[in-house]
Amino acid sequence: MTINLHDFDGEYSLTFNAGGLAADAAVAAAGHEPNGYFWEDLVQFAWPDIAENLEFDSEAGMFCAVGSPSDLARLKTALGSVIASPEAVRDIVARAEASGFEFDD
Image 1 (tube, rainbow, N blue to C red):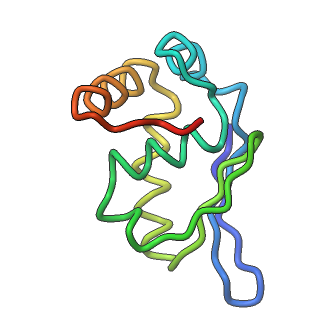
Image 2: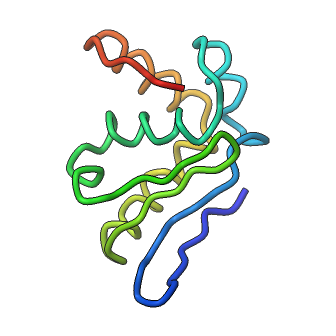
């Protein structure tokens, strides 16, 4: 799985294909769809300080965040370890649900 940073005419985005990730089984076991919308919500819960500076344009098969290169680089670092770790996803989902956060996947 690859997280990509893109520069399109001065607009920067971070994308990755949803599905086929190491954490997909943990997402599904928690009752969610491992799609772009799930990952968008996970970012908004887990890293609100980064998410507040981003715009999201996710789809079912793709996660997409648009923002500054520095915010996207921070997000790439944070997400890189989570999408490869079912344990990290389970932990974030459990904390989110315990706090009353609702995923819209």
